Amino acid sequence: MKKITNRLVSWASILGENAEAQARTTSTMPFIYPHLALMPDAHLGLGATVGSVIPTLRAVIPAAVGVDIGCGMIAVRTQFTRADLTGSLTELREQIERAVPTSAGAYNRKVVATAESRIQELTELAEASGFDPAQYAGNWQLQLGTLGSGNHFIEVSLDESDAVWLFLHSGSRGVGNKIAQSHIKTARALMEKWWITLPDPDLAYLVEGTREFERYIAELRWAQRFALLNREEMMDRVVRQVSEWMHEPVIEQERINCHHNFTQVEEHYGKRVWVSRKGAISARPGEAGLIPGSMGTASYVVEGLGNPVSLMSSPHGAGREYSRSAARKTFTADDLRAAMVGIEYRDTDAFIDEIPAAYKPIDQIMSDAADLVTIRHTLRQIVNVKGD
Image (cartoon, rainbow, N blue to C red):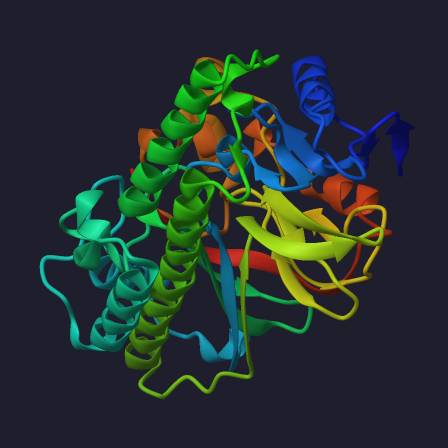
């Protein structure tokens, strides 16, 4: 499904008026080229709509990347099937929770051996980029290999053939958030300095060729790499815990790791542009991707179709219909328990705002995305790990 209006192309059949108005406002920025692409899971965000693909000429809007730079998904297909999982799933969940710090502000107590080479890579990248991530977070090394809260999760899932998949969602944690917030603030200050009036202050931008732009891109790339390695580190720990629980090593059949909050240079419609995907994944022809539903619903392993109008992109998940505060006023812990029947999870009121009913129906999202991706595997959860 496509809805084309001026410089906005939308695949969203479910879209709130505020989100559509926000996307339309972003699409009027003079450096958007050729158009803004709105994904099926689009919903209201800070400055730019979550679920949008924003191509820009010689400028980048830091808020259009988002504050969780490099947030994304990683999945591993194992050799196991459902019939192999004969132990206690509660025990497996608890083992994963012990191995990976969850919740906002929960970090490692020390740098573990598996993280050392990744931290060394990030240290060298920061030095080459001319900045010290400790200026944003003195404990950034301890943040590598930690999940966070909100919609971040770790899951054990089964595909249509009952093969066991390990699946998780996280980003660049506190250090990435502080990098993003700093550059959003810088962009807003520059707009004031240059007497530029914007339709929304959070559409403040940085111009290619300036010192502020180059600094942002260098630190953005570092945060994107941190996020990818953070997911790799956590997945390695999950694989280890599953191996111990199974008393047999996990043999990885496939590993997919993809961002859905990021910026990179691409060529579209004959021009070099900065493509900011805020809640969208790259979906070039044959490219593997991951689209999770909400807790308690299906997730998808997909393959890109390379749709040029979408700027070779696809949705990144279900997309919220209720804000967190509205979800807490609308739903109860009993509602969540009913939605999670048959899934091993930590029963707590802290997850009420993550109830599946707070999100758009993932089946509708995938139907809307039929000309963006093909579905390779449909996953259903059996274990869910989240942070408060």
